[in-house]
Length: 372
Image 1: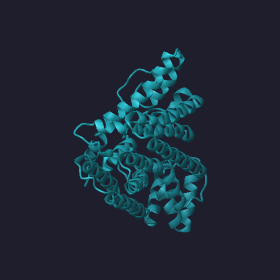
Image 2: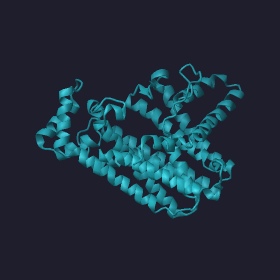
Image 3: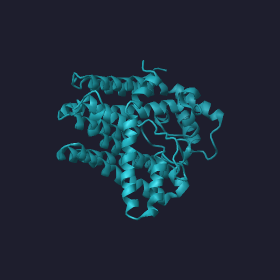
Image 4: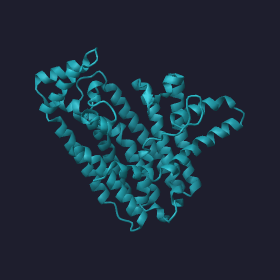
């Protein structure tokens, strides 16, 4: 069993290098703009730094809350697991080849967060006001667009680290494809709002695009930087995709059934928010007519949902064996991730073996949610 502290250590292992790469990427373009005399652009880059958690709303430095940095960490683990292009040694210098790509993936993820906050009307992220709430929607859209462009610009830094031009071009194509797919997923997510005819299959397709695409992209890009073996690259892509779906299903489970201690939020929070996540959609498909009618009425009503209504919704979930289904689906995604990981050829060096072990721990950590 992988404990939260063990997982935290795994996610922290490359955090310093990732953070430095991210800050360097922003600083490079900011300094170029400012040195050219465009001092009014200070606020533009300040907004980027604010969203990344490095400064407050007055642009003064603050203690950073970088989040999990899951996607760039996955990229670096896949890079190591694939052999790190034979550059492994006792220091972290071999990471330099992959760090621009890791930073690019994280910047891409943050561009999507800025736009998601606008589209969803979210006023807080990581316990701070969202970008659009402070500086307005037009400037937040522009800052998100800037991060998108900066992500691609940062990716080309792999050329300075000795990555061949052909590999760099393929990395760009993989990232572009992932951005298009996740935009498709966001379109589907937004189009589902207000509809009552969304199937479980349609929801899974949506999260496969919106959530899993960038995770799969991260793992694939890391593998491409680590090896020329196409089978290894494909298997690590499959691992990333399965883990992306699994993480979302885990969040859906915790959003309904986690305790306050586990989640740090109100139990059944997704029910109170009437979020049409996997539990709701499964219950709607598999419960009797009266329960279906009740779910639709509660999730469409204008007044806030009451405690009594939440209890009724949870009872419907129980009658339709929704939790059991979600746990089984999560377990299946973890099985697919494990299967993909086990089929990755072992490189035989300590760094690759450690990376494989860390990725296995991530699977076990996510899988724990299916056993409670």
